[in-house]
Image 1 (cartoon, rainbow, N blue to C red):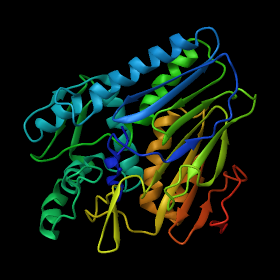
Image 2: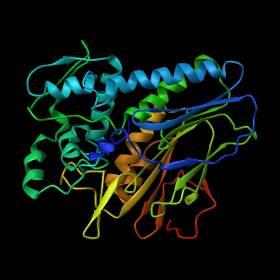
Image 3: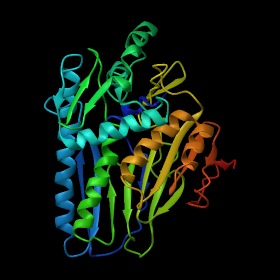
Image 4: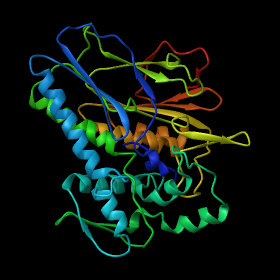
Length: 353
């Protein structure tokens, strides 16, 4: 469910994101149970270790599907679809988990001064990037939609779990947060069964590594090279253990017209894809941080919209959170907490701080 703030129209990350990070095959434990499946329009993989591993994975798959039924904007019966259909008309009662995502989204909309904004749905639908209807809209069409983009017009009543979009034509899109939220919910299932080792990979852009892999080492996550189609081409490899990781990039869904790349991360302030020289952001959040999966998703998109300077300043203000920002000139900026987290750095890239 991740499709993407002042620029994150991010939330436009919708539900079918191509691979942004790749799990390096470094597990060799016969007790590790794995299963792959598709949910939120995204290929996913769950791995768990121990006698209850199959139960953990099956229960987790069911939970992910339940969340998709609530949060997908393409399922007519979902809570999100009901909210969007009732825009400008009335409040809609929804599941408490949707309320939690909405409240968290508004919190980071305020923190980012609107760079993160889930009300970007009308623009996401207009551009339709990632579908066979993707196109560059006219300036007039974009200007017509811009007044509908305003997170302050999402009214939430937490007492009775109801939501209303205040203007007709508004639409929310939880694509930039739902998969991260699902990671956290799946992690709760792993904890319930006391899983010591495992990997939650919900589309490769939203990952949580539990404990160690089959070789008793941290899980190895390859961060995709933003300008290479090869599945074995990485910026570098990040090792995680009891940490969440999220990557957002301009290569996930895009089209090129007259030599210009138009990607899915739309700016709520301009109505156009973010154009600030960033092509990839990876955020790592420690497992001790509450809602770390959801936070990693939000922040990867928020930092993408803010750009290297403001984005890293935000990350540096947050404990147990770190990131790298890769720009179109192949330079990598890192937060103060990132240190030497990335190894095997591709020779195409250079750190600048």
